Length: 296
Length: 323
Image 1 (cartoon, rainbow over the protein chains, first blue to last red):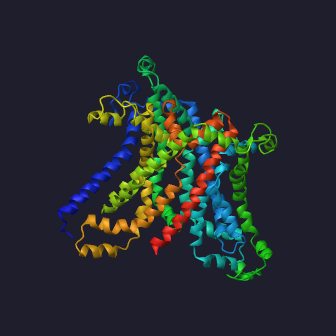
Image 2: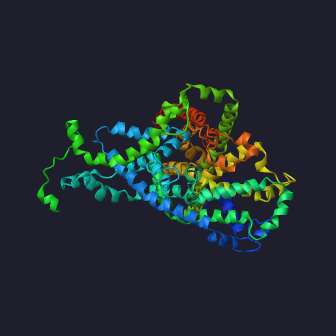
Image 3: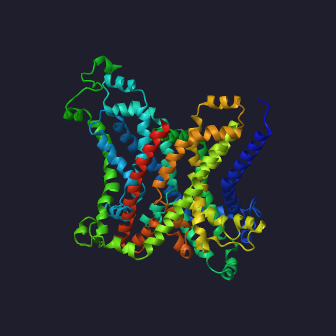
Protein backbone atom coordinates (compact mmCIF):
# COMPACT_ATOMS: atom_id res chain seq x y z
CA UNK A 1 0.00 0.00 0.00
CA UNK A 2 2.49 2.65 -1.14
CA UNK A 3 0.02 4.92 -2.86
CA UNK A 4 -0.99 7.46 -0.25
CA UNK A 5 -2.94 10.44 -1.37
CA UNK A 6 -2.03 14.00 -0.45
CA UNK A 7 -5.07 14.19 1.77
CA UNK A 8 -3.96 11.20 3.78
CA UNK A 9 -0.49 12.66 4.25
CA UNK A 10 -1.93 15.98 5.37
CA UNK A 11 -4.29 14.23 7.75
CA UNK A 12 -1.44 12.19 9.21
CA UNK A 13 0.56 15.38 9.62
CA UNK A 14 -2.24 17.04 11.56
CA UNK A 15 -2.66 13.96 13.74
CA UNK A 16 1.03 13.79 14.59
CA UNK A 17 1.22 17.50 15.27
CA UNK A 18 -1.72 17.16 17.65
CA UNK A 19 -0.13 14.18 19.43
CA UNK A 20 3.18 15.98 19.80
CA UNK A 21 1.34 18.94 21.28
CA UNK A 22 -0.39 16.64 23.77
CA UNK A 23 2.90 15.02 24.70
CA UNK A 24 4.48 18.42 25.24
CA UNK A 25 1.61 19.66 27.36
CA UNK A 26 1.53 16.55 29.54
CA UNK A 27 5.26 16.09 29.86
CA UNK A 28 6.69 19.59 29.96
CA UNK A 29 5.25 20.55 33.38
CA UNK A 30 7.10 17.63 34.96
CA UNK A 31 10.29 18.55 33.18
CA UNK A 32 9.94 22.17 34.27
CA UNK A 33 9.57 21.15 37.92
CA UNK A 34 12.66 18.94 37.65
CA UNK A 35 14.69 21.74 36.09
CA UNK A 36 13.58 24.26 38.70
CA UNK A 37 14.48 21.84 41.49
CA UNK A 38 18.08 21.50 40.34
CA UNK A 39 18.67 25.17 39.62
CA UNK A 40 20.39 27.40 42.13
CA UNK A 41 17.76 29.12 44.25
CA UNK A 42 19.27 32.58 44.00
CA UNK A 43 19.28 32.28 40.24
CA UNK A 44 15.74 30.91 40.01
CA UNK A 45 14.35 34.09 41.59
CA UNK A 46 15.52 36.04 38.53
CA UNK A 47 13.16 33.93 36.44
CA UNK A 48 13.55 32.66 32.92
CA UNK A 49 14.23 29.00 33.75
CA UNK A 50 12.17 27.01 31.27
CA UNK A 51 14.00 24.14 29.62
CA UNK A 52 17.46 23.77 31.13
CA UNK A 53 18.96 24.66 34.49
CA UNK A 54 21.17 27.73 34.36
CA UNK A 55 23.12 27.05 37.52
CA UNK A 56 23.00 23.35 38.26
CA UNK A 57 23.06 22.47 41.95
CA UNK A 58 21.61 19.82 44.22
CA UNK A 59 21.47 21.94 47.37
CA UNK A 60 17.71 21.67 47.66
CA UNK A 61 17.87 17.87 47.55
CA UNK A 62 20.57 17.89 50.24
CA UNK A 63 18.30 20.18 52.21
CA UNK A 64 15.42 17.72 51.89
CA UNK A 65 17.49 14.67 52.75
CA UNK A 66 18.62 16.35 55.96
CA UNK A 67 15.19 17.75 56.80
CA UNK A 68 13.85 15.51 59.55
CA UNK A 69 10.21 16.54 58.96
CA UNK A 70 10.25 15.58 55.28
CA UNK A 71 12.26 12.40 55.80
CA UNK A 72 9.93 11.26 58.55
CA UNK A 73 6.98 12.00 56.28
CA UNK A 74 8.51 9.81 53.57
CA UNK A 75 8.78 7.04 56.13
CA UNK A 76 5.12 7.39 57.19
CA UNK A 77 4.03 7.33 53.54
CA UNK A 78 6.08 4.22 52.79
CA UNK A 79 4.69 2.55 55.92
CA UNK A 80 1.05 3.19 55.02
CA UNK A 81 1.63 2.02 51.44
CA UNK A 82 3.42 -1.16 52.46
CA UNK A 83 0.97 -2.07 55.23
CA UNK A 84 -2.23 -0.81 53.65
CA UNK A 85 -1.91 -2.28 50.16
CA UNK A 86 -1.67 -6.03 50.97
CA UNK A 87 -4.32 -5.73 53.68
CA UNK A 88 -6.69 -4.07 51.25
CA UNK A 89 -6.04 -6.62 48.52
CA UNK A 90 -6.68 -9.51 50.90
CA UNK A 91 -9.91 -8.06 52.32
CA UNK A 92 -11.20 -7.22 48.83
CA UNK A 93 -10.41 -10.63 47.36
CA UNK A 94 -11.84 -12.40 50.42
CA UNK A 95 -15.07 -10.54 49.75
CA UNK A 96 -15.01 -10.99 45.98
CA UNK A 97 -14.81 -14.78 46.08
CA UNK A 98 -18.02 -15.51 48.03
CA UNK A 99 -19.90 -12.90 46.02
CA UNK A 100 -18.81 -14.61 42.80
CA UNK A 101 -20.47 -17.83 43.97
CA UNK A 102 -23.90 -18.15 42.38
CA UNK A 103 -25.09 -20.49 45.13
CA UNK A 104 -24.37 -18.11 47.99
CA UNK A 105 -27.50 -17.65 50.08
CA UNK A 106 -28.67 -14.03 49.98
CA UNK A 107 -26.09 -13.17 47.37
CA UNK A 108 -28.09 -10.28 45.93
CA UNK A 109 -28.85 -8.44 49.18
CA UNK A 110 -25.27 -8.83 50.38
CA UNK A 111 -23.94 -7.50 47.09
CA UNK A 112 -26.41 -4.63 47.26
CA UNK A 113 -25.23 -3.85 50.81
CA UNK A 114 -21.77 -3.12 49.42
CA UNK A 115 -22.73 -1.52 46.11
CA UNK A 116 -25.08 0.96 47.78
CA UNK A 117 -22.08 2.60 49.47
CA UNK A 118 -20.71 3.53 46.05
CA UNK A 119 -23.63 5.83 45.45
CA UNK A 120 -24.66 7.16 48.83
CA UNK A 121 -22.59 8.32 51.76
CA UNK A 122 -22.98 10.20 55.00
CA UNK A 123 -20.64 12.98 53.97
CA UNK A 124 -17.55 14.37 55.62
CA UNK A 125 -18.84 15.57 58.98
CA UNK A 126 -20.61 12.41 60.22
CA UNK A 127 -17.66 10.44 58.84
CA UNK A 128 -15.29 12.50 60.94
CA UNK A 129 -17.51 11.96 63.99
CA UNK A 130 -17.48 8.21 63.45
CA UNK A 131 -13.69 8.20 63.16
CA UNK A 132 -13.59 10.08 66.44
CA UNK A 133 -16.00 7.65 68.08
CA UNK A 134 -13.91 4.63 67.14
CA UNK A 135 -10.76 6.45 68.31
CA UNK A 136 -9.00 6.54 64.96
CA UNK A 137 -8.35 10.29 64.90
CA UNK A 138 -4.65 10.95 65.32
CA UNK A 139 -3.62 7.33 64.92
CA UNK A 140 -1.77 5.56 62.14
CA UNK A 141 -4.72 3.24 61.54
CA UNK A 142 -6.86 6.07 60.23
CA UNK A 143 -4.76 5.71 57.05
CA UNK A 144 -5.47 1.99 56.74
CA UNK A 145 -8.82 0.84 58.12
CA UNK A 146 -11.35 3.25 56.57
CA UNK A 147 -10.05 2.57 53.08
CA UNK A 148 -9.72 -1.21 53.31
CA UNK A 149 -12.77 -2.02 51.21
CA UNK A 150 -13.11 -0.54 47.76
CA UNK A 151 -16.31 -1.73 46.14
CA UNK A 152 -15.25 -0.85 42.62
CA UNK A 153 -12.10 -2.97 42.90
CA UNK A 154 -14.16 -5.75 44.45
CA UNK A 155 -16.36 -5.79 41.35
CA UNK A 156 -13.28 -6.02 39.13
CA UNK A 157 -12.00 -9.03 41.08
CA UNK A 158 -15.41 -10.69 41.26
CA UNK A 159 -15.90 -10.36 37.51
CA UNK A 160 -12.49 -11.89 36.98
CA UNK A 161 -13.22 -14.85 39.27
CA UNK A 162 -16.56 -15.48 37.54
CA UNK A 163 -14.72 -15.92 34.26
CA UNK A 164 -12.37 -18.59 35.61
CA UNK A 165 -13.14 -22.16 34.54
CA UNK A 166 -15.45 -23.77 37.09
CA UNK A 167 -13.97 -27.24 36.61
CA UNK A 168 -10.97 -26.44 38.79
CA UNK A 169 -13.22 -25.49 41.69
CA UNK A 170 -15.34 -28.61 41.17
CA UNK A 171 -12.37 -30.93 41.14
CA UNK A 172 -10.94 -29.28 44.25
CA UNK A 173 -14.30 -29.88 45.92
CA UNK A 174 -14.23 -33.53 44.95
CA UNK A 175 -10.77 -33.65 46.51
CA UNK A 176 -12.44 -32.61 49.73
CA UNK A 177 -11.16 -29.07 49.91
CA UNK A 178 -13.32 -26.59 51.83
CA UNK A 179 -14.05 -23.09 50.57
CA UNK A 180 -11.13 -21.52 52.42
CA UNK A 181 -8.69 -24.02 50.92
CA UNK A 182 -10.19 -23.58 47.47
CA UNK A 183 -9.82 -19.84 47.79
CA UNK A 184 -6.22 -19.80 48.97
CA UNK A 185 -4.89 -22.68 46.87
CA UNK A 186 -6.90 -22.36 43.65
CA UNK A 187 -8.58 -19.00 43.26
CA UNK A 188 -6.02 -16.68 44.83
CA UNK A 189 -3.10 -17.74 42.59
CA UNK A 190 -5.29 -17.60 39.49
CA UNK A 191 -6.48 -14.06 40.18
CA UNK A 192 -2.96 -12.63 40.36
CA UNK A 193 -3.30 -10.45 37.22
CA UNK A 194 -6.36 -8.61 38.51
CA UNK A 195 -4.95 -8.50 42.05
CA UNK A 196 -1.81 -6.86 40.68
CA UNK A 197 -4.01 -4.24 39.05
CA UNK A 198 -5.90 -3.34 42.19
CA UNK A 199 -2.70 -3.54 44.26
CA UNK A 200 -1.16 -0.95 41.96
CA UNK A 201 -4.17 1.32 42.22
CA UNK A 202 -4.33 0.93 45.99
CA UNK A 203 -0.61 1.57 46.41
CA UNK A 204 -0.78 4.68 44.25
CA UNK A 205 -3.80 5.79 46.27
CA UNK A 206 -1.88 5.39 49.53
CA UNK A 207 1.13 7.16 48.16
CA UNK A 208 -0.98 10.08 46.93
CA UNK A 209 -3.36 10.39 49.89
CA UNK A 210 -3.12 13.68 51.70
CA UNK A 211 -6.52 14.55 53.09
CA UNK A 212 -6.68 11.93 55.85
CA UNK A 213 -3.28 12.93 57.15
CA UNK A 214 -4.05 16.63 56.73
CA UNK A 215 -7.50 16.62 58.36
CA UNK A 216 -7.59 13.62 60.69
CA UNK A 217 -4.14 13.72 62.30
CA UNK A 218 -2.61 16.50 64.36
CA UNK A 219 0.66 14.96 65.50
CA UNK A 220 3.54 15.96 63.26
CA UNK A 221 4.81 12.38 63.55
CA UNK A 222 1.79 11.21 61.48
CA UNK A 223 2.12 13.65 58.59
CA UNK A 224 2.57 11.95 55.22
CA UNK A 225 4.75 13.33 52.47
CA UNK A 226 1.77 14.72 50.57
CA UNK A 227 0.44 16.42 53.71
CA UNK A 228 3.83 18.09 54.26
CA UNK A 229 3.76 19.13 50.62
CA UNK A 230 0.36 20.74 51.20
CA UNK A 231 1.88 22.71 54.06
CA UNK A 232 4.76 23.88 51.87
CA UNK A 233 2.29 24.81 49.13
CA UNK A 234 0.19 26.86 51.58
CA UNK A 235 3.27 28.74 52.76
CA UNK A 236 4.19 29.49 49.17
CA UNK A 237 0.74 30.79 48.33
CA UNK A 238 0.56 33.05 51.35
CA UNK A 239 4.05 34.22 50.42
CA UNK A 240 3.07 35.05 46.84
CA UNK A 241 0.31 37.36 48.02
CA UNK A 242 2.62 39.79 49.80
CA UNK A 243 3.75 42.77 47.79
CA UNK A 244 6.70 42.71 45.42
CA UNK A 245 8.61 45.17 47.60
CA UNK A 246 8.29 42.79 50.50
CA UNK A 247 9.48 39.99 48.27
CA UNK A 248 12.57 41.90 47.24
CA UNK A 249 13.42 42.54 50.85
CA UNK A 250 12.96 38.86 51.58
CA UNK A 251 14.92 37.65 48.61
CA UNK A 252 18.19 38.46 50.35
CA UNK A 253 17.26 35.97 53.04
CA UNK A 254 16.19 33.38 50.52
CA UNK A 255 19.35 33.51 48.52
CA UNK A 256 20.78 30.32 49.95
CA UNK A 257 17.78 28.08 49.46
CA UNK A 258 14.46 29.55 48.47
CA UNK A 259 11.25 27.88 49.54
CA UNK A 260 10.32 27.62 45.85
CA UNK A 261 13.22 25.34 45.03
CA UNK A 262 12.55 23.25 48.12
CA UNK A 263 8.92 23.03 47.02
CA UNK A 264 9.98 21.84 43.59
CA UNK A 265 12.45 19.31 45.00
CA UNK A 266 9.82 17.92 47.38
CA UNK A 267 7.41 17.67 44.45
CA UNK A 268 9.97 15.67 42.50
CA UNK A 269 10.57 13.34 45.46
CA UNK A 270 6.82 12.73 45.78
CA UNK A 271 6.41 12.09 42.05
CA UNK A 272 9.48 9.97 41.38
CA UNK A 273 8.29 6.56 42.67
CA UNK A 274 5.14 6.80 40.58
CA UNK A 275 6.99 7.77 37.43
CA UNK A 276 9.39 4.89 37.96
CA UNK A 277 6.83 2.21 38.70
CA UNK A 278 3.77 2.74 36.59
CA UNK A 279 5.09 2.21 33.03
CA UNK A 280 5.94 -1.36 34.01
CA UNK A 281 2.49 -2.09 35.37
CA UNK A 282 0.67 -0.26 32.62
CA UNK A 283 -0.49 -3.29 30.65
CA UNK A 284 -2.01 -4.78 33.79
CA UNK A 285 -4.17 -1.83 34.63
CA UNK A 286 -5.15 -1.20 31.03
CA UNK A 287 -6.39 -4.77 30.86
CA UNK A 288 -8.10 -4.46 34.24
CA UNK A 289 -9.81 -1.22 33.29
CA UNK A 290 -11.16 -2.45 29.98
CA UNK A 291 -12.33 -5.67 31.56
CA UNK A 292 -14.30 -3.75 34.16
CA UNK A 293 -15.67 -1.43 31.52
CA UNK A 294 -16.97 -4.22 29.36
CA UNK A 295 -18.75 -5.86 32.26
CA UNK A 296 -20.25 -2.83 33.98
CA UNK B 1 -3.82 -37.05 45.74
CA UNK B 2 -4.50 -38.35 49.18
CA UNK B 3 -7.81 -36.64 49.71
CA UNK B 4 -9.04 -37.99 46.44
CA UNK B 5 -8.22 -41.56 47.41
CA UNK B 6 -10.25 -41.19 50.56
CA UNK B 7 -13.34 -40.24 48.57
CA UNK B 8 -14.72 -37.34 50.54
CA UNK B 9 -18.14 -38.12 52.01
CA UNK B 10 -19.19 -34.46 51.68
CA UNK B 11 -22.04 -34.08 49.17
CA UNK B 12 -21.06 -32.08 46.16
CA UNK B 13 -23.81 -29.53 45.48
CA UNK B 14 -24.90 -29.72 41.89
CA UNK B 15 -26.04 -26.60 40.10
CA UNK B 16 -29.75 -26.07 40.50
CA UNK B 17 -30.07 -28.59 43.29
CA UNK B 18 -32.45 -27.47 46.01
CA UNK B 19 -31.25 -27.76 49.56
CA UNK B 20 -32.83 -26.26 52.63
CA UNK B 21 -31.52 -22.76 53.20
CA UNK B 22 -30.13 -23.56 56.63
CA UNK B 23 -28.17 -26.47 55.24
CA UNK B 24 -26.71 -24.40 52.48
CA UNK B 25 -25.84 -21.73 55.02
CA UNK B 26 -24.01 -24.31 57.11
CA UNK B 27 -22.14 -25.51 54.04
CA UNK B 28 -21.20 -21.95 53.23
CA UNK B 29 -19.88 -21.08 56.69
CA UNK B 30 -16.38 -20.35 55.38
CA UNK B 31 -17.73 -18.16 52.61
CA UNK B 32 -19.61 -16.14 55.19
CA UNK B 33 -16.51 -15.94 57.35
CA UNK B 34 -14.65 -14.44 54.41
CA UNK B 35 -17.24 -11.68 54.03
CA UNK B 36 -17.03 -10.63 57.68
CA UNK B 37 -14.00 -8.27 57.58
CA UNK B 38 -15.36 -6.28 54.65
CA UNK B 39 -18.86 -6.34 56.14
CA UNK B 40 -17.69 -4.85 59.43
CA UNK B 41 -15.50 -2.20 57.76
CA UNK B 42 -18.37 -1.11 55.54
CA UNK B 43 -20.78 -1.04 58.48
CA UNK B 44 -18.49 1.21 60.51
CA UNK B 45 -17.05 3.50 57.85
CA UNK B 46 -19.96 3.73 55.37
CA UNK B 47 -23.20 2.94 57.17
CA UNK B 48 -22.49 4.49 60.57
CA UNK B 49 -21.92 7.92 58.94
CA UNK B 50 -25.24 7.51 57.10
CA UNK B 51 -27.04 7.04 60.41
CA UNK B 52 -24.90 9.80 61.83
CA UNK B 53 -26.58 12.14 59.36
CA UNK B 54 -29.26 12.51 62.02
CA UNK B 55 -27.02 15.27 63.38
CA UNK B 56 -28.19 17.46 60.49
CA UNK B 57 -31.64 17.59 62.10
CA UNK B 58 -30.54 18.50 65.62
CA UNK B 59 -28.46 21.10 67.36
CA UNK B 60 -25.48 18.84 67.74
CA UNK B 61 -23.24 19.50 70.71
CA UNK B 62 -19.86 17.79 70.60
CA UNK B 63 -18.70 15.86 73.64
CA UNK B 64 -19.60 12.45 74.94
CA UNK B 65 -20.11 9.61 72.51
CA UNK B 66 -21.24 10.51 69.01
CA UNK B 67 -24.49 8.58 68.88
CA UNK B 68 -25.14 9.16 72.59
CA UNK B 69 -25.04 12.92 72.15
CA UNK B 70 -27.94 12.65 69.71
CA UNK B 71 -30.27 12.47 72.68
CA UNK B 72 -29.00 15.71 74.16
CA UNK B 73 -29.11 17.79 70.99
CA UNK B 74 -32.34 19.70 70.45
CA UNK B 75 -34.33 18.50 67.42
CA UNK B 76 -34.60 21.37 64.92
CA UNK B 77 -36.04 19.57 61.90
CA UNK B 78 -35.11 21.17 58.61
CA UNK B 79 -33.84 24.37 60.21
CA UNK B 80 -30.22 23.92 59.03
CA UNK B 81 -31.33 23.23 55.46
CA UNK B 82 -33.52 26.32 55.53
CA UNK B 83 -30.58 28.34 56.81
CA UNK B 84 -28.40 27.08 53.95
CA UNK B 85 -30.96 27.97 51.28
CA UNK B 86 -31.71 31.40 52.73
CA UNK B 87 -28.33 32.84 53.62
CA UNK B 88 -27.16 33.44 50.07
CA UNK B 89 -24.25 30.99 50.20
CA UNK B 90 -26.36 28.32 48.53
CA UNK B 91 -26.47 30.23 45.25
CA UNK B 92 -22.79 31.02 45.19
CA UNK B 93 -21.74 27.48 46.07
CA UNK B 94 -24.20 25.87 43.64
CA UNK B 95 -23.18 28.26 40.87
CA UNK B 96 -19.50 27.41 41.38
CA UNK B 97 -20.12 23.68 41.64
CA UNK B 98 -22.20 23.54 38.47
CA UNK B 99 -20.02 26.00 36.55
CA UNK B 100 -16.81 24.14 37.34
CA UNK B 101 -18.39 20.77 36.63
CA UNK B 102 -19.97 21.76 33.35
CA UNK B 103 -16.90 23.64 32.16
CA UNK B 104 -14.75 20.61 33.03
CA UNK B 105 -17.17 18.47 31.05
CA UNK B 106 -17.10 20.83 28.09
CA UNK B 107 -13.30 20.87 27.92
CA UNK B 108 -12.60 17.43 29.32
CA UNK B 109 -15.20 15.22 27.66
CA UNK B 110 -14.28 15.53 23.98
CA UNK B 111 -10.52 15.58 24.68
CA UNK B 112 -10.03 11.85 25.36
CA UNK B 113 -12.15 10.96 22.33
CA UNK B 114 -10.00 13.10 20.07
CA UNK B 115 -6.86 11.74 21.69
CA UNK B 116 -7.99 8.13 21.24
CA UNK B 117 -8.82 8.76 17.58
CA UNK B 118 -5.42 10.35 17.08
CA UNK B 119 -3.53 7.55 18.85
CA UNK B 120 -5.44 5.08 16.70
CA UNK B 121 -3.97 6.68 13.60
CA UNK B 122 -0.42 5.95 14.75
CA UNK B 123 0.78 2.88 12.88
CA UNK B 124 3.99 2.22 14.80
CA UNK B 125 3.38 0.19 17.95
CA UNK B 126 6.39 1.74 19.64
CA UNK B 127 5.20 5.33 19.25
CA UNK B 128 1.68 4.34 20.14
CA UNK B 129 2.95 3.05 23.45
CA UNK B 130 5.08 6.14 24.09
CA UNK B 131 2.14 8.46 23.42
CA UNK B 132 -0.09 6.46 25.72
CA UNK B 133 2.42 6.14 28.53
CA UNK B 134 3.13 9.86 28.62
CA UNK B 135 -0.50 10.87 28.40
CA UNK B 136 -1.49 8.64 31.38
CA UNK B 137 1.18 10.07 33.63
CA UNK B 138 -0.72 13.04 35.10
CA UNK B 139 -3.55 10.75 36.18
CA UNK B 140 -1.29 8.95 38.63
CA UNK B 141 0.03 11.93 40.54
CA UNK B 142 -1.83 13.42 43.46
CA UNK B 143 -3.66 16.71 43.24
CA UNK B 144 -1.12 18.06 45.69
CA UNK B 145 1.65 17.52 43.16
CA UNK B 146 -0.57 18.67 40.31
CA UNK B 147 -1.45 21.85 42.21
CA UNK B 148 2.23 22.55 42.87
CA UNK B 149 2.99 22.11 39.19
CA UNK B 150 0.03 24.16 37.95
CA UNK B 151 0.69 27.03 40.34
CA UNK B 152 4.30 27.12 39.15
CA UNK B 153 3.32 27.11 35.48
CA UNK B 154 0.80 29.91 36.02
CA UNK B 155 3.03 32.05 38.24
CA UNK B 156 4.24 35.43 37.02
CA UNK B 157 7.47 33.84 35.79
CA UNK B 158 5.91 30.61 34.62
CA UNK B 159 5.82 29.33 31.08
CA UNK B 160 2.19 30.26 30.46
CA UNK B 161 2.79 33.92 31.16
CA UNK B 162 6.02 33.81 29.16
CA UNK B 163 4.18 32.45 26.12
CA UNK B 164 1.33 34.94 26.52
CA UNK B 165 3.83 37.79 26.59
CA UNK B 166 5.85 36.46 23.64
CA UNK B 167 2.67 36.32 21.59
CA UNK B 168 1.79 39.84 22.78
CA UNK B 169 -1.53 38.68 24.13
CA UNK B 170 -0.66 40.46 27.33
CA UNK B 171 2.03 42.98 28.26
CA UNK B 172 2.17 42.20 31.94
CA UNK B 173 2.15 38.78 33.61
CA UNK B 174 -1.41 37.72 34.40
CA UNK B 175 -1.98 37.12 38.11
CA UNK B 176 -4.06 33.99 37.59
CA UNK B 177 -4.62 33.24 41.25
CA UNK B 178 -5.59 36.73 42.31
CA UNK B 179 -8.71 37.17 40.22
CA UNK B 180 -11.65 34.86 40.77
CA UNK B 181 -12.86 34.83 37.19
CA UNK B 182 -9.87 32.77 36.03
CA UNK B 183 -10.51 30.07 38.59
CA UNK B 184 -13.22 28.10 36.79
CA UNK B 185 -11.02 27.87 33.71
CA UNK B 186 -8.03 26.79 35.78
CA UNK B 187 -10.08 24.00 37.34
CA UNK B 188 -11.53 22.85 34.02
CA UNK B 189 -8.25 22.85 32.14
CA UNK B 190 -6.32 21.20 34.95
CA UNK B 191 -8.96 18.46 35.09
CA UNK B 192 -8.56 18.01 31.37
CA UNK B 193 -4.77 17.91 31.65
CA UNK B 194 -4.85 15.33 34.41
CA UNK B 195 -7.32 12.81 33.02
CA UNK B 196 -7.41 13.15 29.26
CA UNK B 197 -4.94 10.33 28.61
CA UNK B 198 -6.40 7.96 31.15
CA UNK B 199 -9.97 8.45 30.00
CA UNK B 200 -8.86 7.68 26.46
CA UNK B 201 -8.33 4.04 27.56
CA UNK B 202 -12.07 3.33 27.35
CA UNK B 203 -12.30 4.69 23.84
CA UNK B 204 -9.15 2.88 22.71
CA UNK B 205 -10.69 -0.35 24.00
CA UNK B 206 -13.82 0.47 22.02
CA UNK B 207 -11.81 1.11 18.87
CA UNK B 208 -9.88 -2.14 19.34
CA UNK B 209 -13.12 -4.11 19.22
CA UNK B 210 -14.19 -2.77 15.83
CA UNK B 211 -14.24 -5.40 13.12
CA UNK B 212 -11.17 -4.78 10.87
CA UNK B 213 -13.12 -6.03 7.84
CA UNK B 214 -15.14 -2.82 7.94
CA UNK B 215 -11.97 -0.82 7.35
CA UNK B 216 -10.78 -3.12 4.63
CA UNK B 217 -14.07 -2.89 2.80
CA UNK B 218 -14.08 0.89 3.04
CA UNK B 219 -10.50 1.07 1.81
CA UNK B 220 -11.41 -0.97 -1.23
CA UNK B 221 -14.13 1.58 -1.89
CA UNK B 222 -11.44 4.26 -1.81
CA UNK B 223 -12.06 5.87 1.56
CA UNK B 224 -9.37 8.20 2.89
CA UNK B 225 -8.09 7.85 6.43
CA UNK B 226 -10.14 10.80 7.52
CA UNK B 227 -13.26 9.20 6.12
CA UNK B 228 -12.49 5.94 7.88
CA UNK B 229 -12.37 7.82 11.18
CA UNK B 230 -15.50 9.76 10.43
CA UNK B 231 -17.70 7.02 9.04
CA UNK B 232 -16.48 3.90 10.85
CA UNK B 233 -14.57 4.62 14.05
CA UNK B 234 -16.66 7.46 15.37
CA UNK B 235 -20.07 5.82 14.80
CA UNK B 236 -18.75 2.62 16.38
CA UNK B 237 -17.76 4.60 19.47
CA UNK B 238 -21.14 6.30 19.77
CA UNK B 239 -22.64 3.97 22.38
CA UNK B 240 -19.54 4.34 24.58
CA UNK B 241 -19.61 8.10 24.16
CA UNK B 242 -23.30 8.36 25.02
CA UNK B 243 -23.01 6.16 28.11
CA UNK B 244 -19.96 7.96 29.46
CA UNK B 245 -21.59 11.32 28.81
CA UNK B 246 -24.73 10.31 30.68
CA UNK B 247 -22.69 9.00 33.59
CA UNK B 248 -20.62 12.19 33.65
CA UNK B 249 -23.77 14.28 33.83
CA UNK B 250 -24.85 12.16 36.80
CA UNK B 251 -21.76 13.29 38.66
CA UNK B 252 -22.11 17.04 38.12
CA UNK B 253 -22.36 17.76 41.83
CA UNK B 254 -18.99 16.11 42.35
CA UNK B 255 -17.00 19.06 41.09
CA UNK B 256 -14.13 17.84 43.24
CA UNK B 257 -12.50 18.89 46.45
CA UNK B 258 -8.74 18.50 46.17
CA UNK B 259 -8.07 20.82 43.29
CA UNK B 260 -10.29 23.60 44.65
CA UNK B 261 -9.00 23.33 48.17
CA UNK B 262 -5.35 23.20 47.15
CA UNK B 263 -5.40 25.99 44.60
CA UNK B 264 -7.80 28.48 46.17
CA UNK B 265 -6.99 31.47 48.34
CA UNK B 266 -9.06 34.16 50.00
CA UNK B 267 -8.99 36.37 46.90
CA UNK B 268 -10.76 33.85 44.70
CA UNK B 269 -13.06 32.24 47.27
CA UNK B 270 -16.24 33.66 45.70
CA UNK B 271 -15.48 31.65 42.55
CA UNK B 272 -13.63 28.65 43.93
CA UNK B 273 -15.92 27.50 46.74
CA UNK B 274 -17.86 24.32 45.88
CA UNK B 275 -20.17 22.24 48.10
CA UNK B 276 -17.35 20.03 49.37
CA UNK B 277 -14.92 22.80 50.25
CA UNK B 278 -17.78 24.72 51.87
CA UNK B 279 -18.69 21.70 54.00
CA UNK B 280 -15.10 21.25 55.03
CA UNK B 281 -14.65 24.87 56.01
CA UNK B 282 -17.84 25.12 58.04
CA UNK B 283 -17.61 21.68 59.57
CA UNK B 284 -14.01 20.92 60.39
CA UNK B 285 -12.53 24.40 60.45
CA UNK B 286 -15.35 26.45 61.99
CA UNK B 287 -16.94 23.60 63.99
CA UNK B 288 -20.49 24.24 62.77
CA UNK B 289 -21.04 20.49 62.73
CA UNK B 290 -24.79 20.25 62.26
CA UNK B 291 -24.89 22.93 59.59
CA UNK B 292 -22.06 21.36 57.59
CA UNK B 293 -23.66 17.92 57.97
CA UNK B 294 -26.91 19.32 56.55
CA UNK B 295 -25.10 20.87 53.57
CA UNK B 296 -23.27 17.59 52.98
CA UNK B 297 -26.53 15.67 53.21
CA UNK B 298 -28.19 17.95 50.69
CA UNK B 299 -25.40 17.10 48.28
CA UNK B 300 -25.48 13.34 48.97
CA UNK B 301 -29.24 13.08 48.46
CA UNK B 302 -29.39 15.15 45.29
CA UNK B 303 -26.34 13.38 43.86
CA UNK B 304 -27.89 9.99 44.64
CA UNK B 305 -31.16 10.91 42.94
CA UNK B 306 -29.21 12.13 39.92
CA UNK B 307 -27.31 8.84 39.72
CA UNK B 308 -30.55 6.84 39.90
CA UNK B 309 -32.12 8.87 37.11
CA UNK B 310 -29.04 8.71 34.97
CA UNK B 311 -28.66 4.97 35.47
CA UNK B 312 -32.15 4.40 34.13
CA UNK B 313 -31.41 6.61 31.18
CA UNK B 314 -28.12 4.82 30.52
CA UNK B 315 -29.81 1.44 30.52
CA UNK B 316 -32.41 2.62 28.04
CA UNK B 317 -29.88 4.16 25.69
CA UNK B 318 -27.53 1.22 26.02
CA UNK B 319 -30.18 -1.28 24.98
CA UNK B 320 -31.38 0.77 22.09
CA UNK B 321 -28.05 1.52 20.54
CA UNK B 322 -26.40 -1.83 21.11
CA UNK B 323 -29.19 -3.99 19.69
